[in-house]
Length: 277
Picture 1 (cartoon, helix red, strand yellow):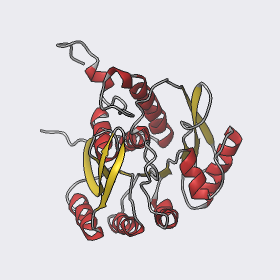
Picture 2 (cartoon, rainbow, N blue to C red; picture 1 turned 45 degrees about the vertical axis):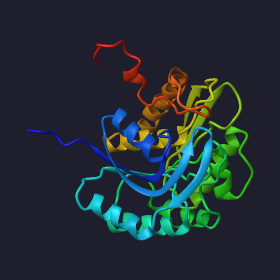
Picture 3 (cartoon, helix red, strand yellow; picture 1 turned 90 degrees about the horizontal axis):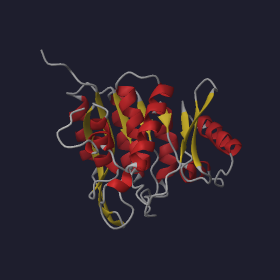
């Protein structure tokens, strides 16, 4: 008798170069032995050098995709990435409520690694108003946290903690403020849990240009952990270990001529030929 794998759904934009967005999420799910489904909300013409065009999918078609997935698959966890417009955010929120989706991880993507803007200005309020109350976890990086709170970039751990509390006050159940854009030899992420407890997840920084898709990959790794039944702190810890190793191995695979992707399959591809897991 065949076993049913845990299923995770990504709702995000497509990256034509494969390093971020839907493609990174599905690779990450697969690396964690989770079956990945997808709802594509936007298409991007993109490579490692930047984003040259964005085409939003009609909201009605996003709704149709969500109804198709939830109407057939037993979705255990949901990752939300780039949503582009307020209209798409409303459609996604309506669909999540209608299907009573659980274990929602919201990565409030606003700007690509290349600097390209991925979210319209009027969509920021829609994220706070419609998606924060639905999410189990919100995972902003330092610039995204500052933008969501309309304040300056956090430069200390105390400031990160204050911003995490500010985001929780907006309706987020749990908040992970990612410190990858900070300074220093280590990268520290701060997890604020619903009960007020805090946990730090620290890893060494790696000197590489190949960091395309790091935020997408971390949030989808957390989602995969939740789909597999891990508690939230454990899922975050496993995801932090995974993304750190994926960044460390990024230079071993040459993709493109700009900011290349992290190595999603470092655990398998680096093994000698003929050696099984």
